[in-house]
Length: 374
Image (cartoon, rainbow, N blue to C red; front, side, top):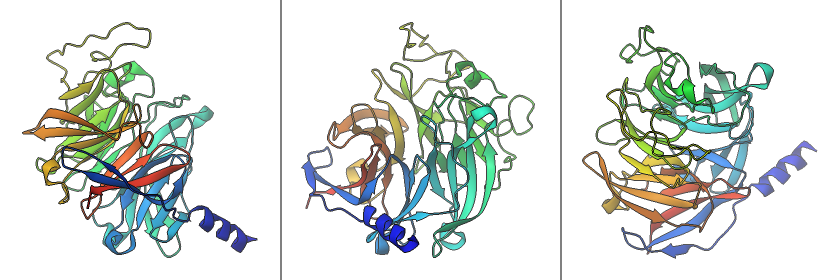
């Protein structure tokens, strides 16, 4: 029965062939083709070091599966920490340690069960035993302590800084005032070492004025984050309320205003103040109406030289990929790609060969590869 179950799983995760589709873009015509098997609500993916030879990448599914996807199919990885798949929560981001090729170390952000049915964002470090398809030495290195029972606004993007420390985004958990509370984990960008310790150069490392892990505060639900390839700065992309989705450069110790200021409106229809104050930062770009942004990545590949240094953002609403033209640290233009063609775009990454890949938040969903048209 066990072998039969394995064969059934392998068949379900076998690659499917779908014809490529052609689109016009500011970088010229591109083709978009589906890759890998059908998936169920994927949230993030990461290319493994041998991707050019094997097509290997890791994919998280929100319900709690971590998959190793290769050219010849996909396999489920065991040994995951407990995951609370609640509302928007579940198994979310995956990030490979900078030395993954040698250590096999990876990091997962996920919502974990807590007291009274709560589910909080946590980050787990583990080591991938690829031959055994198993995670070893799983260790929790970061944990929110909001103990909210709702299923919204987990944030959860993971980005490595140039020095190997780890940025973690957390949402306000639908508790708006907590984003301004410096001693709440909610609505923040946090920065920790790979062991979960506090870097001594964190802006509040002494813990006197804020939690020592806090890097920046006043964020609503930053589900997109990427490191700028030249400056090394962290850019975040956050959901607004009704409008007011924001792109911010998350600088240490800065306050990005939520919910004191926003370009959106309350769901009741009441406006937020949009003007900044001396104590809050303005976004460098925002959307109104909302596009419901999610994953983000800076393009630094070779296939699209026109887009090098620009930011790509997946959007759930309108089902599109946004190309933001970035010059000298400012957003100077916006291009909307593939609107309504493939579904809600949850994650976007740049492959080692410079192709752009994205995943849709559907069931079934697919990974798709974008490359210049032959």
